[in-house]
Length: 274
Ligand SMILES: [Zn+2]
Image (tube, rainbow, N blue to C red):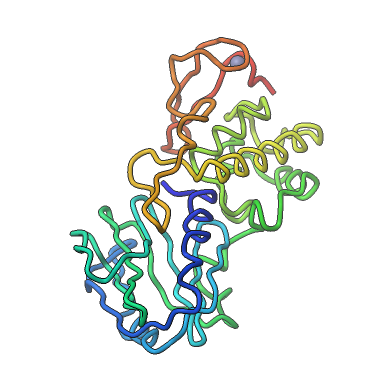
């Protein structure tokens, strides 16, 4: 599932589309996120608009134009790529923006957990998804004092706390396990038990984990690709994720897998004690 480093990789690889004019808009008319259909009539208003920028907040992408902005969430299996117009379309293509220069921006999503929407830039914070988001983990950074202040009011396990997009936008299931390993914190520790030194370790660990993953082009477990079709290499650099039964890279103890909030969680039972 694409998290901040993957979505940021897509954002960066989409920048060659800036300056291009959208001439045609095609959509599959199929429902995406929670069976909701993308707003067809609003999507059509992109025709004639010129792409002026590509932004990201948490796991949301925003393609700005001189008209409205296109909001994209990749969900689990979403891809948003630049193609030549003549290339065959993937079976699960849901949106095609034809560009005046002969390229196309295509959104494909096999499992259809992704989202497409149109927002007005001045009112984008009213969008249900964007309205909930806390500070972006990389753009805004993770402030240990702010993190600690919120943690003190929460009784949820740390892993679930870190996944809460209203606390930190951009961290998902893979990097939550990775960051907690780096910070030597147990995923099941209650958030309100966090100390200031632990909050500082956690904030630094989140930043390092996401920065390194971004430098490696993101983590491709199955579907994720950049907008130019490249897969990410970060899967080769994961400390604990899907490494259950293998030795901890810090203390050699076998990595354990558990389920927290319905999501697979990986940790070292020996050196993640706090
Ligand atoms: Zn260990």
